[in-house]
Image (cartoon, rainbow, N blue to C red; front, side, top):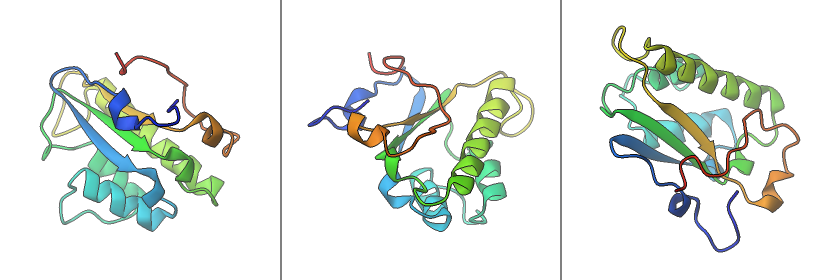
Length: 145
């Protein structure tokens, strides 16, 4: 939860070696905008297809961003796909699938050890009520200490 006067970025302190990438939820109001914002923030290759399958493929690869793990911080998450619950559910499924691939060691180029992959949705207490179903666990301090 982001308190008034705080920035989401100031609350996240990733362990050494984990890449922290900031995705601006206010730029993700439609699927097309979401794909563009993820491509920008994660420096997707030119071949990125700007669709759900391509997003899942790129999130489960990230070979162009070598790191010991990944934290994606989505700021202003209340603005993510606000008018289309079905697209939001598809987005959550893509994130879950990418997380499972990294967690099982099947992400990237071939089999490897499990790699941390976390997506954090930053919202204020007031904005939290904008969506009845976030589809994610609420955490308070795993990455904020």
